[in-house]
Every structure is written in C-alpha cells, then in structure tokens.
Image (cartoon, rainbow, N blue to C red):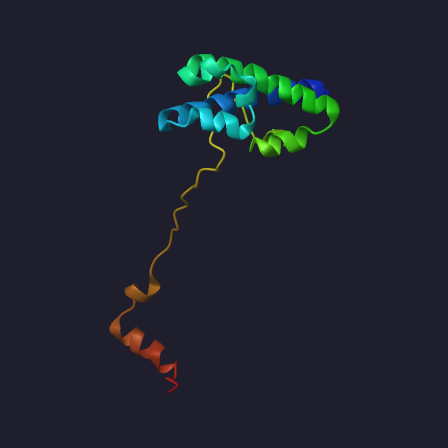
Length: 146
C-alpha cells in the first residue's frame, strides 16, 4: 500500500494504533489491570471515572480508541508524534510498511522459495566394478605416508 502523503499514512497509523491498543487492553483486562494500564499510557485521565470503576471492556475500548486518535492527531499537528508513539510503545508504526505484503483473497499464495530440483547422477562406480587384481594394481601406485 503506497501512501501519497503523510496524511494518508497517518490514517494507516491511526488504524493500526487503535487495533494494537484494543489488543493490549484486552490482554490487560483479562489480567485484571485494565485501569492501571490506561492510567500508565495516559488515557485514563480522559475517561469518565464511573466507566473506569465499572471496568467494562467494550465501553473503555471505544472511548480509548477515540481518545488515542485525538492524541495522535494533536501530536502530529504539534510535532511530537514520535515521542507520543514511543510513550505508548508503538514506535514501530512510523516505519514503512514495505516489508508487509498483502495478498488478495482470490489470489493463491505462491511459495517464495524455489523448489529444490533433484538431478540424478548417471554413471557407474568404477571402483566397485574392478576386479581384485585391478584394485591391487591401483593401490601399488599410492604410497602410504606415516
């Protein structure tokens, strides 16, 4: 996916940041420390206290995603986007997506590695075809070095 301008790239960053935030919130929720996670990343102060006390994952995910998008846009406008993403531990969202490949649903995936082709070697084992006399004659030509 090629981005023509940084605003289009910012949209991609917003989507990926929201997805990553929701995954991390889900993990924190099941570990029992969702409110402390939101406070640690700075989104807890923007949430309603009663919603935080209830700890409803769906409500908090929606509010947190909206607040995160607002913070990212504000950071972009004021020029501290990198610092904000570093604080959220999402700095890798700024890097290019060239290494990420997408495949359309109708298209089959092709193997990137070349298949190894077996090539049969034709010939004979001359040594096994020799008679005992020929082997002795051949060994006379070689000297054993100690």
